[in-house]
Amino acid sequence: MNILGFLVSIIIFIGGFYLMGSSFYVPGFEAAVFFLGIITSAIGFAIPVHLLKRIDG
Image 1 (cartoon, one colour):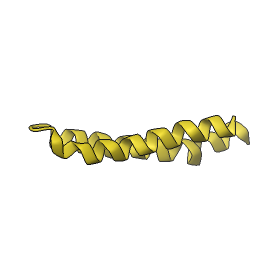
Image 2 (cartoon, rainbow, N blue to C red):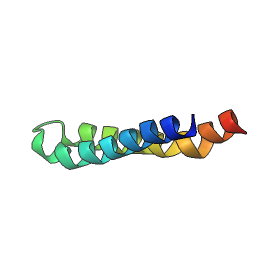
Image 3 (cartoon, one colour):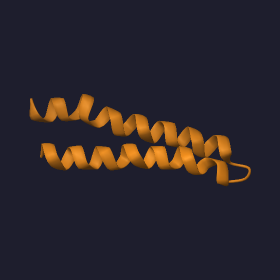
């Protein structure tokens, strides 16, 4: 379960970076897509730090 949770969280984390980078190519919604990328990266970071610790512990 650790490996699967880690893989899911790293995919979400990198997807957030992708959203932040691609926000400059979305005319009119740059701030919204960039903010969504920040939130997505934060969720990807929070999964192994907070959730997996409680599931495995």
